[in-house]
Image (cartoon, rainbow, N blue to C red; front, side, top):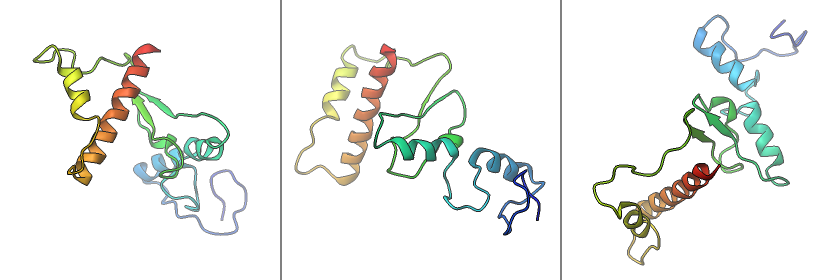
Length: 136
């Protein structure tokens, strides 16, 4: 079985040839035997070096498929617009919207639910990342 320029392969791949969508997926993931499913080369590389280096996969105005690693190993892929980051709520209905939103999603309380905790954490991480992107 010949395939993908790797010479003679010893086992069959799971690639469906000649279907445009599957060929695009295969090019982005480069994993002919699905040894590490749902990951891609740059994501697997990030997974390998994240313990020794400070790394972050960044996608600029395009798909993040080729940057995805194993869930929970590397930081999530950061996707930004080609025109750069924008400030949070640039035309807010009140002047103190950003401060109010940060205080609302900051410190949790004993009665806070699981989903509110997860949302608040994700929101605050996004706000911190947004602040960083505005600086660079």
